[in-house]
Amino acid sequence: MVLVRLLRVTRADLSKKPAEVQAMFNDVAKRYDITNDILSLGQDRRWRRDVINAVEPLPGERVLDLAAGTGTSSQPFADAGAEVVPCDFSIGMLQVGKQAKPHLMFTAGDGTKLPFADASFDAVTISFGLRNIVDTDAGLREMRRVTKPGGRLVVCEFSTPTWAPFRTVYLEYLMKALPPVARAVSSSPDAYVYLAESIRAWPDQQGLADRITAAGWTATKWRNLTGGIVALHHAIA
Image (cartoon, rainbow, N blue to C red; front, side, top):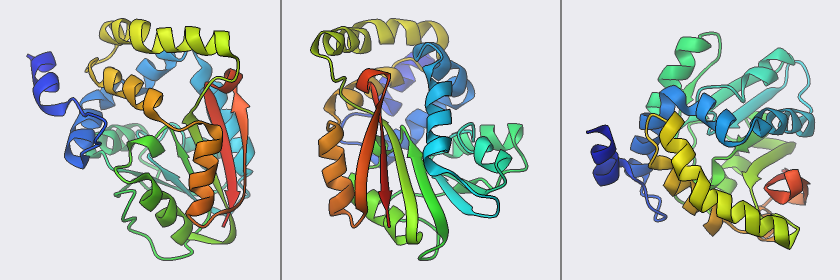
């Protein structure tokens, strides 16, 4: 019954209709972190460490962690002494996060209309969530708006493997192996079909860098992780 409801109601498509995306993430919230850990073969933990190292949060700095989900990506900022604000569009994700991490300042927010004043944060980060914002460019402009002059942006997102043979293997895993694995471990496995499709449709490293720069950020650069499966983009407000 759950699977039928997901297929008919909460299976988002690449048009990224906000209500569908929100419902989809509400459905996967309870097992989201453990599912990601399994599907990435544990690489998500390393990627989170790379994000922290790229942001270089200082004690007392204010950091916006957008698309924070359950706050797993936010906790290391708090551990570093920063004032981190986990923000997400999915109320289900925020509820799960608040239960596990009541000390964090979870905030509901739309990535295209952030509920924060101009120049509110020293740094803004978003991991594996930019491609789910209905208007990517509007989201990047909003992140720029709420960042202080000279502040940092770090985007961690799936990208294009740089070695052609590896890219072929990766795409085979993404579209053929990932859905069956998700069915075994996820509370709403069909959501991961959408996620796989959204990854394939996402721009490559240079393409995303160009969009970040067009949104008003400067000094945009990136670093490939795990052979380009993931790219870490860094820019300055």
